[in-house]
Length: 397
Ligand SMILES: *[C@@H]1O[C@H](CO)[C@@H](O)[C@H](O)[C@H]1NC(C)=O
Ligand SMILES: *[C@@H]1O[C@H](CO)[C@@H](O)[C@H](O)[C@H]1NC(C)=O
Ligand SMILES: *[C@@H]1O[C@H](CO)[C@@H](O)[C@H](O)[C@H]1NC(C)=O
Image (tube, rainbow, N blue to C red; front, side, top):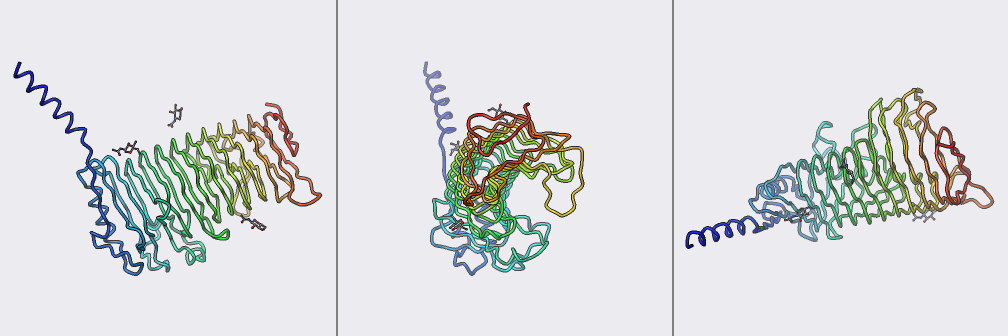
């Protein structure tokens, strides 16, 4: 009896011990970080990360206090880490040196400014005030040079990113690359409409990603979805200025790109060059399928709806017979105004036509008085439901 009782106790105790969650908070200021916006805090931030990542607690928090400005050159926050969950709590502002040469990086390791790699269970929280400010103005003027992305998260699972602001970064603001399971909410991303390649959020090779309640205005795509992206939901987004929400570009230089199960809904585009867009290069392989754009409002967009299988960003592009297969694309309840006459453009490859295009309740007007909007459709097959204005002639199939 007594032995059994003791055994029970031992089992219970060890169960409890396993369940106890511990939390450690690492204030970056305790690791030599100054936060005056003048001192280079790079080394201090790397030390604070080491301590956070090696903590023996089940959850660890790296804390950036409010009202401070943390000046830093490129950072690599590397995992795997010991805690199951890591929170990076940013209240102040993280800023980059304003002169590109002060970044002191070679072109090879300058693809990003703040990079997280192999960190599972990462939560980056800005509580609405935390700001990532890359001071990209000088970078934007450098022609042909590789410009760094601001925040890049690579090879990680279960990411959360919320309440952060991003401002004027040299290139893309947020990049997810090889991320499985992510939730991005309440982000505010801003850069001038003329700033080159400053996409708001770019995603590639990532699955099960959810983006919601974000306001994005930049010089490139608000959100762009590259090859290897599957199972994504994007909703309640305000986009503009910028190039819209794009799938692609896919199939560049003959690449095999696969994108599927993407739902984009409740998006307002204001003064964007495109709205809902799918762009693929000639000569690519793979597919973009099961994609829905629903409840989209375009205010003054150049091209509200566009599928372009002849995407090319330079002057001479050769014709090819292969293309990324586009199928199962729905545009439902797309309303608003178009700046160009062609409000709907579906321009698909002759050898690999677009199939299963659904247009349902689309109403797009020209924003010029007395002008009518029109639709262009080549090699697109599918069906039209409800009221669709301008009239789109999809081949049946
Ligand atoms: C760790 O993060 C995951 C995913 O974000 C979350 O579901 C889980 O509750 C977190 N666990 C702890 C101990 O905070
Ligand atoms: C996408 O979601 C479906 C259905 O929820 C699931 O069966 C599939 O495994 C997911 N794909 C990936 C790559 O996670
Ligand atoms: C959109 O562009 C119009 C005309 O160019 C301008 O008046 C308006 O303020 C812009 N709207 C936004 C939200 O930028």
